[in-house]
Each structure stands twice: as C-alpha cells, then as structure tokens.
Amino acid sequence: MASAKLARILGKDASSINASSPLSEGRPAVDAVFLSQLVSPAVPDKLGFLFGVYTKSLQGGGEYGDYLKKQSVSYAALFIMNPRQFSGASAPSTAQTFLDLMKADGSSPLTFPSGFFPALIAELRSMSLTGYASGTCLQSLLVGHRESVVPLLIKEVIKLNLVDPFHGHFAVLQELGSSKGAMEAVLKSMFWETPLPMERLQGAGVATEKATLLGVFLRLSSIPETSRDPTTRDVIMMRHPVGEACFADMHRKSRQEVDIAIDSVRVQLHAVQDCLTIFVRGMLKDPTHQDKMFSWVASALRFSEARKKEGFGRYFSSPTSSVGFLFNLFTV
Image (cartoon, rainbow, N blue to C red; front, side, top):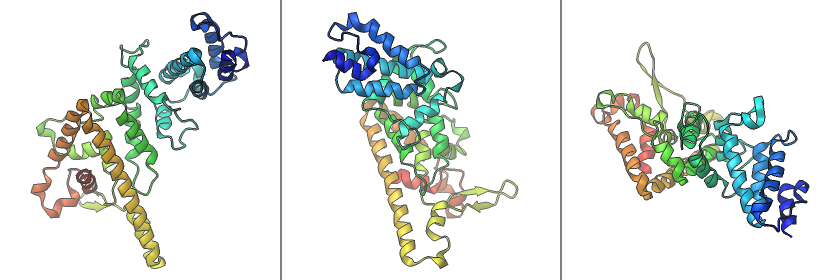
C-alpha cells in the first residue's frame, strides 16, 4: 500500500521503491527518482511538476509523502531564486513569475497549492545561497531591487483604475499581509514608507501615494486627478476612465444604462475599501506591525497638512496626496 502511494506521487519510476521501509533507507532512491524527473527535459514546467508532487503528497504517503512535500517546497525556492539552474537560457523572470502566482487570477497557468505559499515563504526566509547574505533570499525576492516583487506590483497597480480588473493585485496584497515573514521584509524597505526629512516634505504626499505599497492601492478611486503643464504651470484636469465609463456619450444612453454604470463603479469602490480595511486591520492586530502601520498613516497625513493652508482654490492642484487617496484613507 505504501509503495502504491509513493508510485502515485512520483509515477511508475518509483514503483520499485519499498516505501514500507524506514525513510532513512529509502530516501536515496526517492531522491534519485525525484531529481531525475525534475531536471528531465521532458518536464519543461518545473514549478508545475513541484506543485503536482506537493498536491499528491497532501493526499497521503506517510513519512515519504511528508518528505516529498518538504522537497517540493525547497526546490521551488531554489527554482524561484535561480531558475537558470533548472531551465537554462529560457528561464522566466523570477519576480514576475512569483507575482503572477500570487495573483491567482489567470496571469499564471499555475496557482499555489493549499499551504504551499506559507511554507515557501518560510523556506526562502531561512535558506542561504551563494551570492546572498545569510537570510536575505526572501528580502531580495520581494524588495531587494527595482525588479523585485513589490516594486513590480506597485508599477502594475499605479496603472490601474476602478474600471480595470484589480482583484488579483489585491490578492497579492492580502497574501503579503497574511505572511509575517513577507511583511517583515516589506516593512523594512523603502517600498513601505519613504523616509524624508522635514525640509523635503513638498511632494512627499505624492511619493507616499505613488511609490509605496499601500499608497498605490489607496489611490484607486472615482475622483479625477490633475497634472500641471510643465511650461505654463496651469492645472490640467485629466480625463478619468471612471467618468468616461459612466458618462461618455450621454446623449446615446438611457437613464437606466447610466445608473447601471454608476452602480458598477460604486460596487468596485466598496470592494477596494473593503479589501484595504481587511489589510489595515490585519496590520493593526499584529503587535509587530502596529507601529509601522501607525507611522505610515501619520506620515501620509503629515505630508498632506499643506492642504489646510491652500484653501479650495488649489485643492485639486496640490503637490500633496490626491483627493481620492485621502478619501479612501479616511474611509478605511
């Protein structure tokens, strides 16, 4: 029975292994089959193979199954940090692959099996690789440089608005927020809170909104933004996709069609605010994250104090955070 379960996990190549024997005796044979399949050119989708082994191991397999679960996670971490070791010149972008997996919205043909993501984060947090300082693999993957997971996420979200599909990106935010190890790396980086001295506060509100992880999600609103003409410094009202979706070609739309479009935007806005509320509450409930969350909110408000002096006339042309950003922040 044990051997049959092992063969179900690794295929017929493992049928000759006596899984009734202790793992210490059968491990070399299991490793040989597992690794030969992983590096085989006949298995081009390395992560798909590892996810498959992990999923089958969840369904039983005794200590051999438990061992293969751990091996699947360990080799997935190695693949994510150094895909060329497995795929050669055709290796995918590590951070983009990881980001698409976290979205679980069809961006990747694969999704993390149940329990795989937290185990992977723990493995990346503890592993040591040549070229990386001890314990920095997870930090490098998430926030180590401009092409890491979090800055790539920020780049994608900054292009979105309420009429775009954004639920996959919020899924990433929630995954990060639910992982203590992942959030520790994010909170220590410049992608959480931009450190600026008091004398450089002008424009810091914009940086908080457009260059920090939480800021780019808070800016998803139905309120138009503005920009300035670089020559005349005149305020330019930007055409907002939400307004266009609701009110473009009004003379051709019935009242019912307009109402339906407005209701759709309202639902999207509530979804954004609900997701942000869940994330912020989770941060505040964690004693190790509370201070960072309060510090971020305090900075966002401090950077927007200039609004009190500007009056309504400059309300829409302020160098501070946008109206939509602040509206979502106060709602959350």
